[in-house]
Length: 83
Image (cartoon, rainbow, N blue to C red; front, side, top):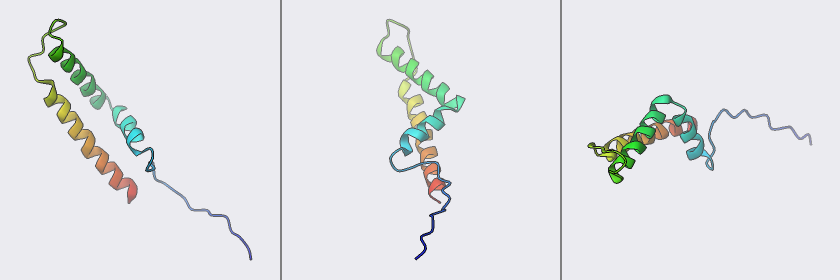
């Protein structure tokens, strides 16, 4: 019997073991996501260490919005990659 070489083409970007890490790296390559991460971290520092600087805005609103956008994009990318 002749054994043929498997010549399937895989176009998926993610695997089950690296989906979260690769997806977050791809998302934080976008300048807007990285900007909101830095701003959120600065706001958290100002909220919990008022001696450094005052932050009158609750940082969890900005961080929550960023996490929501990252989550929705992660689900969208996962569905597109699976299809």
